[in-house]
Length: 195
Image (tube, rainbow, N blue to C red; front, side, top):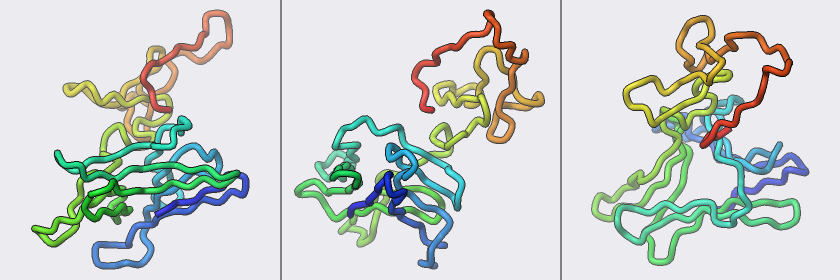
């Protein structure tokens, strides 16, 4: 199943969710490439971005997902033909039947057919409810999922929670001292960040 995108023409295919568990009409969530850059996949809730992938590095194989301890796998690849880019989902040789879908709850799901249960079983899903969410910690905030005891949302040095609240989705962080654009101001590199 290819999902095509042409940044020059501003075209990108989208996979839409159902409206609900029993309603197959077009839902509120969709996933597809970002035609404005051609470098990322996005999940939208209506017109608002709720998740984005890391920028494309140029690799033809983007990722693969394996079911349990078996060799059953789905492989996500990208192909380029001139201005056209295609994202494809291939099933590894010898794998069980699999599919990818955008759920009505806003999750992209990879499913495998279980012959014992006679139904589709979800084996990988994203985004999660934590740092995977787009702009999860608001303006100038960052999300740290490695600190189990504290808040995932934090402010960098020189910033504090906006309006004294925690740096969560809507509040974010604000400068402690206004930017003066003088010799005392500088840029700081923050490692292991997804912009």
